[in-house]
Image 1: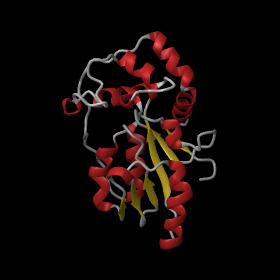
Image 2: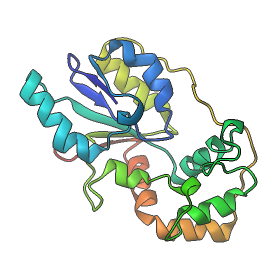
Image 3: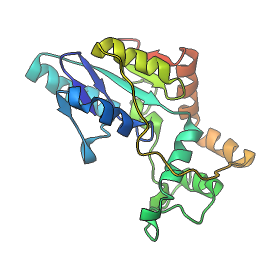
Image 4: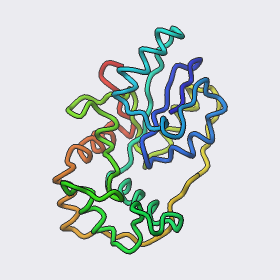
Length: 206
């Protein structure tokens, strides 16, 4: 998470949405940087805990900005990321299993450690119906996100890819896709809502 007090925005690091690249490009301009175990602070925690602290301490309540990735592609990114050689032999490794199996593990009642990846819906909302981030951008339409950052940070923002997952084939069967859409319907609905807003969803009270 990056806090830009002077420019009154905070970047929330939704997992597997290019957050490392954003951090590398912009952390030198941020007044406050939350990294490592504190990097992925959720939108609801930011709104309820961090934002009030910033307002009380610095007299500024920065608007929260986040990115959401197409749900299947975000899970596929987790699958590829955990197939890296450095994870071989660990409980996090996905090497040796198909993407189809991984998705079924993700949506199971008791997923193994390698499939415990959280949900973008949970990260961005209150877990019910309210989107807690003030601005949410579609990962697949980066031009909107970059234009927003460039305008608010008052300089042209360019982000080079970092921490890219391995290039491996990861197809998904129609049956498993249907199961994923059923179990994680809220994620797909939220992403569709962002796309319907031309790739930039703005909170109602923002």
